[in-house]
Length: 222
Image 1 (tube, helix red, strand yellow):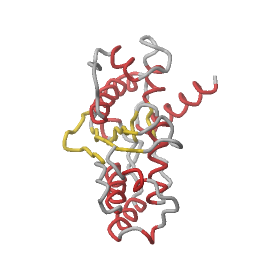
Image 2 (spheres, helix red, strand yellow; image 1 turned 60 degrees about the vertical axis):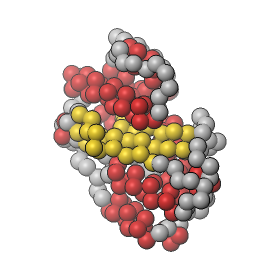
Image 3 (cartoon, helix red, strand yellow; image 1 turned 135 degrees about the vertical axis):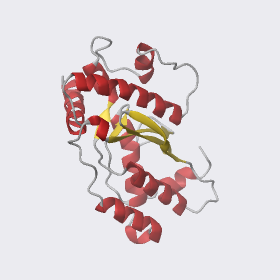
């Protein structure tokens, strides 16, 4: 972690009046955006795959240290459609963090977000965006941690670490990986999941989000 990033990232009581003008304009545009229609076929929908770097395992105790995200349209990872939050140095303008977090909101554009363990990833994002920008961040999540064992029960029917699924699908998961590596690998798993979802008549983003919610609820309560 870059020294000083944590003290910038979590500052309680964020108010719009305290934000830089350009950040306020970005937030206004994001709030005004109705978001994409989710009743289109998957391959007409832009999904955003996201992962985070943190200093701990729990949003209430650890800190968000980085965000990486990539856009996928037509089931294809688009190299130019990518985002990375780079922590500023200790002597940086604190508003730089606000700008980067607002830029993430603008990049995601209220698209469905794909990740592995949305409670973990979303918890850190929610806390940072609430504390810094006053944003109650509640996107549509597609959580592969729960969907993969539901749609690929013949391979594994239990919730497991990400590397378990990477190994099952023959993806190289050896050695150290940064968050962008993780994001790309999650994107590759998502490509496979989309094909299986279509086979099971889960044909739109709306239905996939609903399946993710239902699967998460059922597996946590039974």
